[in-house]
Length: 76
Image 1 (spheres, rainbow, N blue to C red):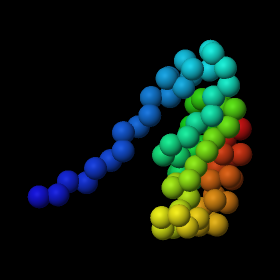
Image 2 (cartoon, rainbow, N blue to C red):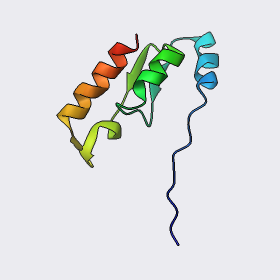
Image 3 (tube, rainbow, N blue to C red):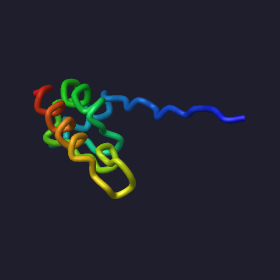
Image 4 (cartoon, one colour):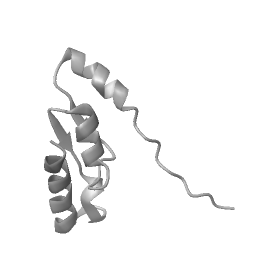
């Protein structure tokens, strides 16, 4: 018996609370599909991705990198 697991959605309110103490860089689980929402909701100092733009472990997908950057910039 197998079940599809879905990553939990991050509570952006935690990042907003952290901004009270300084600049915030969002990292972990960001992809071209969700970085726009993250930037719109949190307005972080920066964003970081690694696995979210890979086509296989350790190999970046240039199209996904471009999509990630476009989505992040488009949300500003």
